[in-house]
Length: 208
Image (tube, rainbow, N blue to C red; front, side, top):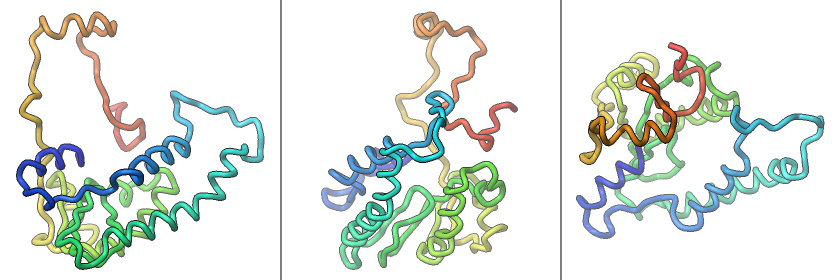
């Protein structure tokens, strides 16, 4: 979502008008942090043989508060008042700052069905949501359903929420059977398969 938004904005704005964040070493650091702290998945299970955390997990837990404080301080230094005219947060919770802020809210399943999400995500979201609602001067949703959820659940006036549907790139479209056949053969797929490109969580309703 964010990558395509940036791709479409870049040619429409003059040089210097668009600042992408995080960037440089911060982006690399966050990517490595997520790689090393990601929980085990069904495709990559880790057997729990010990009650005590391993050395790497212990080091991560000890460094986590310091890392969060360091990134928070850096975020504040980048998004200081007077440097930018507008800050768009494309993923729910904006960084705390004094810049006029707009935020994209993709859905409110975390409030409607918190048991569908990891507990740490629910705790972080619910503790930061009030501040995000207060900080943002306007909101985007990617569906009319999500817009109605914000109005009904959060009491946000409708004129503060704009529905902007996700688009489709110009170079995407149906392929011919001749183009598809070699790929299906290589992947050993038969007609009727389903490609799911998102996380495996109950909220995705894959069984249905």
